[in-house]
Length: 348
Ligand code: SAH
Image 1 (cartoon, rainbow, N blue to C red):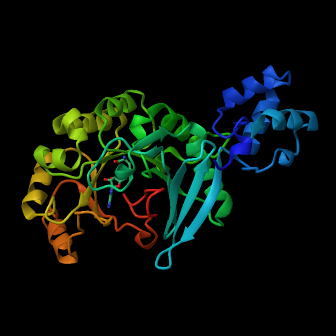
Image 2 (image 1 turned 90 degrees about the horizontal axis):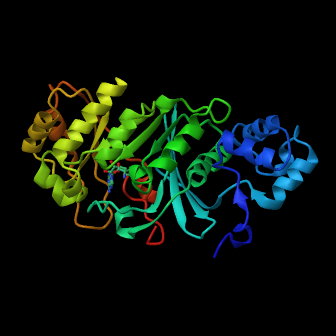
Image 3 (image 1 turned 180 degrees about the vertical axis):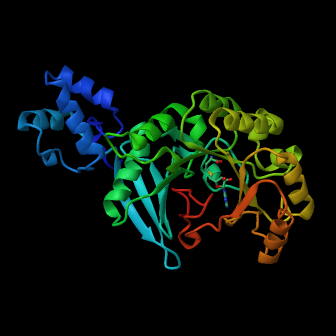
């Protein structure tokens, strides 16, 4: 097992300000040291305890005896030849691998992070689903993807999307505390509106997210224009019905005033007909939202990306709808870094 030498030590990344203050007080040191350590970890993104210049040596030594900084170890860094896209492969302390993707687009530098090893949702078209579910990532394992990638990137990361491997809302608690750490004013300070959490449609968690009034943006992978079609490609629809999903999306809008984004992965012969476009428009109706059409990234299975003409005519049917429609051409498909192409331990 990789990374084994540190397995008994607890990573500091992932601990909240409250937790760090608590552990520092337990060790018999004053409270304000906790805040200093928090800032070194998340603002200065140190790699060694010794870098904490204003923290006395005895505290650093005591910390080093029971703690390490990073829960993740970087194993592979791949760059696309065709686009400004990079993929990072990390190993957890327990030995599993996960991936993150960094995409540059104009002034935006967006990091796509994973929330689970594998995924239990089993969307038929997604490579991560083929791995099955292995485990939830800890808060630290989610946040550390950002810290490592930012440490290796010359430009600041401007946006974070929880759209890598896994279903964020089946790891709700850790995902929210990771977003809170990314957003923390004493730490990383990523604006809440620059953080997007994407779900395949775990309805009770969407409602909880709305009720708790989190400031992060919500994306919902709709991917179908009607319920039977969605059931075929996204079996989660059997548990959480399409009508309930649309109602939960509206609830999010009502309670936050923010538009949910519906992602619609366009697949040839599945959901790309002109009738689908009309049904999609009818399904959404006057719901305030944005729709993001994602031409499918092929993963060697039965699903295909529609031709450019087909994509254009699908979009042209949505010209006069009351919601904004954008197209997201996935980046980094040559290095299997596109949406739905993340699957470690297979052929990636
Ligand atoms: N589980 C979450 C987040 C991960 S998937 C969710 O479902 O939202 C991130 C996005 O990639 C989802 O919108 C999903 O529908 C899309 N996706 C999955 N496989 C894809 C593929 N092969 N090509 C294009 N998009 C894909």
